[in-house]
Image: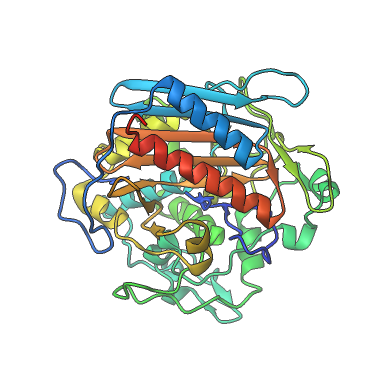
Length: 418
């Protein structure tokens, strides 16, 4: 889903919070003895220093809470087998209850990396091809107003180079606190969002696969289509495939698609948003996420996301050929570059430069009131998972928050013991 899901499309910030704010928006997701780097993955290795101590991490988390204006934040850093945790703020406003690193939370657009992994597994099995088109699998679905599914490939959908309009239901329902309260439990079929997107002309023509700097726009609609294609190819829903191919084999205990259930299982951190026109916080914890579908519906936890990204990084989930495709990146669009300097996007993963050299990989996600960020060092030695709550709607606040959390990710991966 959009990294800045449900923020106005007219905002300077991308309507994606997928990570980007990837949200937003935001690993060398490669095997240690894998293929030569594909186009877009060149660069030196990461040169991290000593991992942050618990005291240093706590200081960084306290700074991030203060500078970002979050209500609460939880961070896990893994270095090898060592895990360090830090939390700050409140789990529920007015209670003084501390945030828990064991809490479940909505993974938002990090869902896209799970979905991309399933698609690439099906490619490895010969059941799909990255050159297959939307029209091949969903005849007549991507059509009208200049949309042509026969020109849109799975690669385009995975890499956000299809040009398909990024539809957001708030265009039709409104984006105030009252609008959220009125629609928070509504069910949406994936076909609805795709049909709504087809009412718009594409943003640009599908990219030439050999263009190193193609047009690019973050499109949750593209991942909704991928979920529908997975179902056509396998006869089972996208989330069932994620469960059987990733969740169960890796022993992930908090990761699932909630469907029409608006709640979260087990302990959770409340999420809060200050909607346009409001001066107070709205508790957005409970909502029906069927509208996000394969673009951002999953619920997960810090350990689960770490375990998944590490397994992917170390080649446990994809063969070398598909891992190379996953890491074939293109520059993200200008709006994203403004917020995430140097951001490149592969097939369901994001790559950003580190101050200590090399890159961090991962994905992020945003929902009303929630920001999730992940980062994995190129060698897979170090991962960071950030779950924060409390989000305002004005551009200045969003930029300040993103700057703070991006600095936290860089500091946690680079370390250095400063």
